[in-house]
Image: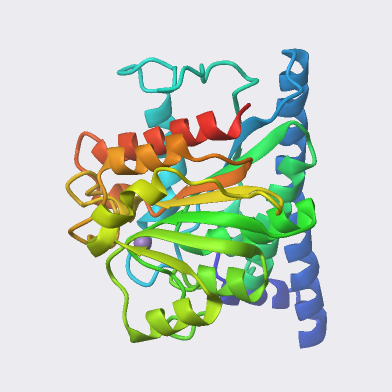
Length: 338
Ligand SMILES: [Mn+2]
C-alpha cells in the first residue's frame, strides 16, 4: 500500500483531524519497525543458542539479508538477491566446504537469521532515515548474540553505510575497510539522494567509522570522485595499475590498533565476463581469483562483511552470477569464522 492510500484509509475513519492521522501513522510505523526487529532478535537468539549448543564459543558467521534496491541510481534488481544467493550457497552442484576447509553445514561456522523485512517497512511509508536505522539495529541485534558476526547479503550498496555504522558503534570505535568495487561510491550525494548506493562511503568517512579505507578494482571514477577520495584520504587501487599493486594487495595486514576489519564486496568489482548479473557492467575488472588471492592472504580480525549489487534480473539463465556471489559469501564466511 502506498503512503497516500494508507493516510487516506486512516482518514476515512472520519472524525480524525490531520495531526491525529499523522500521529497514528507514525505509531503504526513504529509498530512495524518493532515487529521487524523482534523477528531478527528472536532469530538471532535461536541461532546463537544453536551455535552454543553445538559447542561454539568462537566467532561464527551469521547471514543477514537486506533486500533493498531502491537506492540504486539505475536498476533495483539487487532487492531480489538474498534468496538467490542462499539458493546458490546450498546448491548441490558443489560440496559444503570452503577452499580453506571450513564446512558450512556446521552451525559453529555459519548460521542465517533471514532477511530484514525491508518491503514491509517501505509498504507503510517508512523512509530511508528510519529504514537505515532499522538495518543498523538489526546488525546490532545479531552482534548482541555472541559468537555471531554479521555477514550481510545485499541489496544495493547503500546498505553498507548503516551496517558499518552499527558495527563500529557496537564495537566502540572505527575499523579498517577493504572495499572491492568498480566504483568508489563516494559522491557526496547522487541525484540529491544522500543515501544513494553511490554515496555510502562518503557517509562512512564523514562519520569517522573507518580509519583506513582501501578501494580495490576501481575503474569508473570522475573528477568529483577523485576530489572526495583525496578529501577523505582513501587508499585507491585503480584497476589500470592493478598489475603493479598486486603484490602489496596480496600481503595485507589490517585492523591492528582499531576494532578490526570490515570487507565489502560489490559484485561489479569483477570483470563482467565473470559476473554479468550486475546493474553496472564495467569492462576491465578483476578476476574471481584476483579477489580470492587478496582475501585469503589478508591478515586481521574480520568483524563483518557484505556482498552487494548482485542483480538477479541481469543474470544468465543458469544463475552464473548467483554462484559467484554465493562463493564470495562462502569464502568470506571462512574469513569471519574462527
Ligand atoms: Mn559498483
